[in-house]
Amino acid sequence: MNPQIVQPRARYLIPFDPKRVPHMFADVLILGGGIAGLRAALSIDPKLRTVVVTKDELVLSNSSWAQGGIAGVLDPLDDVANHVSDTMSAGKGLCEREVVEAVVKEAPQRIRELIELGTKFDTEDGEIALTQEGGHSHRRIAHALGDATGKEIMRAMIETVRARENIEIWENTFSIDLLTHDQACRGALVWSNSHGKTFVWAKQTILCTGGAGQLYRETTNPDIATADGHAIAFRAGAELRDMEFMQFHPTVLYIAGSSRHLITEAVRGEGAHLVDVTGYRFMPDYHEMGELAPRDEVSLAITAQMEKTKHSCVYLDLTHLPADLVNERFPHIKKVCEKFGIDITSERIPVRPGAHYMIGGVTVDLQGQTTLDGLWAAGEVTSTGLHGANRLASNSLLEGLVYGLRAGEGASRRALEIPDSFTVPPLDSPAQVTYPEEEELNIEDMRNSLSSLMWRQVGILRSEQTLHAARQQIEFWDRYVSRQEFNTVAGWELQNMFLVARVVIAAALARHESRGVHTRSDYPETIEALAEHILIHSAV
Ligand SMILES: Cc1cc2nc3c(=O)[nH]c(=O)nc-3n(C[C@H](O)[C@H](O)[C@H](O)COP(=O)(O)OP(=O)(O)OC[C@H]3O[C@@H](n4cnc5c(N)ncnc54)[C@H](O)[C@@H]3O)c2cc1C
Image (cartoon, rainbow, N blue to C red; front, side, top):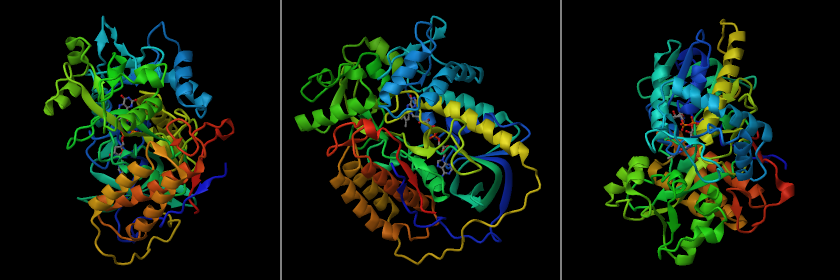
């Protein structure tokens, strides 16, 4: 397939005068401090000055919110070949075998390393307790604090990173754009309330900015997941890939007025049933694996059953499971549901799908190198080839660790080769763009309008007609959104989301088939000849 072209409205989100902006220097600059960013930081040579930038506090990330666990072959009765085959089978023909084998093989080592860093996984008879999740043929998910695995892993990683002398952490610092010269990445323009704009020049830069769930009205992701990394890499000229593949998690708590808490797959792994409003257990009608079918299949089945029953949600039923097991395994979910008067041991939990994981992203090779020289990437912001057209549950924390390590080692090696004498280069594109004065926008209203449109027209089920309508509406809004010069994080996030929404729609329009998490009502079949990646380039 030919690459799709999407033209960013401008190379940089804001104008700047390099003579008036303070300049800082790092050997390695890491944008993002989730599991991928911190694993990268830990693999940088201690001689190198490393700066990690996070837009909020370090503890707020998708990684900290991860519930179910991390996948790896730890049971002697399991086999790496099974994990490979489950991953490939969920990925529906688009996984890259070399990548899958490399990542899956490394999993036990990466998990043991987390234990060495201080992560306390849940145990059973002295061994790491393993659970099963959708699409896995074996129990191979290690978890912590019952259903708050990410919180525990990140606690241990944050403590370790904070103790490293060569690593500085700049929290509440927003990366606005990458700096490029001679078509290579040279660092980033960042902003913070206390310091304003700063150029951070770096010998090598690693992008680990996470996901894009906030593009959709219904999402499990925290507010920070606004696709910034996808947008800034794209404006700088890096290739994006497979952006039509947004994974919708099938079971997100659906209570009006509550934020959309994820109800982990592990609940179904432990035996919970999905029932409709009449109490009917419908999953066996849709898939032979029942509730443990891959996520895309379960999301589609729930959508179909909601339509059939004309009801706004379905229900997770744990009432037949021993109350002790439920209380011990799912303390977080129990607490959240209790706030809304639901006792999960005796009452059903209302759920429906929500945007969960951006499978597409910045193209990287096996080492984590992007198509832009000097820029590496790891974690949810990337497209590595591991997930194909549908991510297998609990493979993403693993991917963040494996590629964080690889990108960190690669960037570190390269930075060591570059001498310290450094002169500030002229930037690739004219920075002094003038932005016309515009009517002040209600940013929150624009963000809600965009995410509602994406949910309705570019969601679980799409078609040429809904995608075209969405594109037209976004192009119209974008005429005034992207021309504005904002001076707030909320404004820059909005502009990033507009750019990435255009990219997602271009990719979804280009895939004339249904595959994995991308379901087109006008092209319902999976077509063997179309098992290719969709590449997206900016016309710079
Ligand atoms: C509710 C929930 C449950 C999940 N459960 C699991 C699970 O059980 N198992 C599993 O494998 N996966 C799970 N996932 C997915 C997994 O958590 C993520 O894919 C993974 O943690 C992503 O890690 P990351 O390091 O790439 O990004 P993140 O952890 O999201 O970190 C992104 C970082 O980038 C920073 N950032 C973003 N934009 C900017 C910017 N413009 N400037 C500066 N900094 C920026 C953020 O501040 C943050 O530090 C879950 C996700 C969610 C939302």
